[in-house]
Image: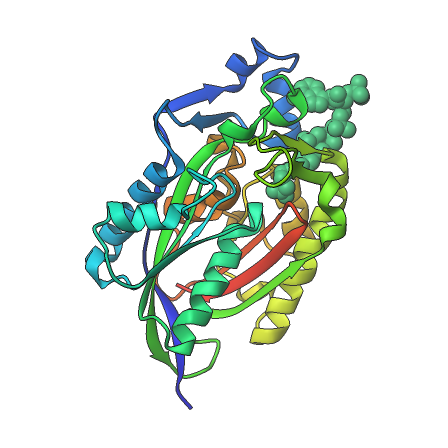
Length: 325
Ligand code: ACO
């Protein structure tokens, strides 16, 4: 029996020009390159320029993804943009990307699931495509976390950075087996009881300010590996695949230790793990497509490869997606 599959046509990413190194941070707060690298694997992050907004980063990543896919912006009828750092409280940043790309048809909206945003956006676009509500989608993760950091808090300001990444998904016909190209299965979870462990202490309805990111790092770490690996096992079970079948593990790039521990628990070999956190830190919803774009550009991810995505973030939210490139 044939089914509709959301097949990746291309991907692209964008990082702002300005690089902020660990050494520069050590000159501002009581930290060191050694501490940051040892605890997180991060060596540098990119910071958006004054006047450079999330929509600008997202548009550049979208343009790169469209070019990589070899398709025209006018063929896009759905834009799902995952972000927790929108240009404005409203309208949705996705609509500004839509306008910048010169698209006046279809639908564009934002999705907010913090660091899990890209996996949530892939699942959402996949459901639209499989339902026949759209034919070709841009799925974007874009963030300017530098704007919500407390630059005096060494426990958080060393961890995050700005960036954007995108993929183009198209509805195509598949056979309904795990040999199909496209998104094979997605699994999303949330549990709001964990709010206080990772949140922003402002917002339009509470303080009428943007607020700053607050995190109990050790508490987040404690939950991360169990939640991530649990939802990945669900994805394997639902698709009749296993860790042995995975060609590339492309996790949310938050922290090398979380990624290593998750891969080890799942018995995924280190050489199958795509790791870019050293170069851009935690870019929240942008981190997975940034890593994807790197591994596609350097030739690691090839057509037909089984790619496993996962993320966990504020809420908590967490999720996994398995797709055949
Ligand atoms: N430089 C130097 N020392 C620091 C820094 C810093 N930047 N930050 C904290 N410290 C100190 C603390 O003050 C503490 O000192 P003390 O022992 O004198 O009190 C000591 O280091 C240990 O602090 P912990 O918070 O216990 O350090 P830990 O080993 O847990 O590492 C970290 C902190 C890196 C934040 C870790 O908990 C972590 O990775 N947590 C996961 C957080 C994460 O990745 N969040 C991203 C969002 S969620 C997600 O995407 C999965």
